[in-house]
Image (tube, rainbow, N blue to C red):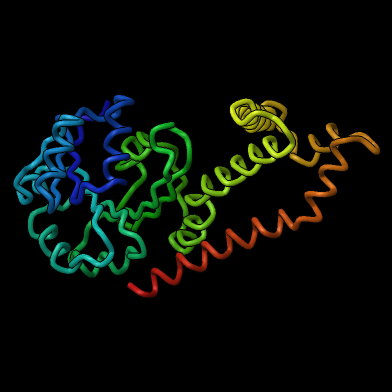
Amino acid sequence: MTTELIHFIGGGQMAEAMIRAVINNGTIAAKNISVSDLRETREQFLHDTYGVLSPVQQDEAIREAGIIVVAVRPQDDLASLGKFIHEHAKPTAVILSIVAGVTIEKFARYLGGEHPIVRVIPNTLTDTGLGYSGVALNSLATTEQVDAFLNGFGKVLYIEEALIDTFTGFGVCGPNYVYYFIESLADAGVLAGIPREQAWQVTLENVAGAVEMLKQTGKHPRQLLDINNSQGGVGIHALHELNNSDFAAGLQRSVLAAVKRTTELGEER
């Protein structure tokens, strides 16, 4: 367990998910986490639910923190917030931003001076310990400064910041595509006559089993498809129909659309 003091500026849903995960898996004790939010009711909720320090004096919390998590909205007054952080933070404190669409360069201008800055696109699977968060560092930040914290709510993929938009549309949105596939497959079972509850159970088991099979065998999906699809059999007929539906290209277009929208949001900022 790390004893680093972590201060969250903003206590919204993503901040709460990160806090819940690191506390539940023992990465950071609640007593070492402080949160400030514009809504007093939110601060009280986070304190009552997780035992974190909230409300707190913002300047004091920033002064003491080793990691400062900026979890506000892109449309908030980041210039004033950056100046406030610069005035009170220790020179060695890591400024970790999860603000959508704000590059490290922009954030550095808001802060002024020189600070270790880490830009994080958190995954949405925080409670499972699975899923990758995309992370980019400026030249003053190191993986050692943040690795323990970031791994507390999933896995970490350190990438060039130029790939952040791509990672958002592909990696962070990834569970959406999987959820939609699972829903559609379960519906197909119901359409074919399987009771809803049983169709749901079979679908989840097939998805989990297929992932485990890929991991255990190290085989490419096409190799496992070939094993399952005998000549003239049921599986190959089903796969033929799926190919006719433009399934693969549709999924790829969805990812590209998500990447494009992520870039647009960043340009609007």
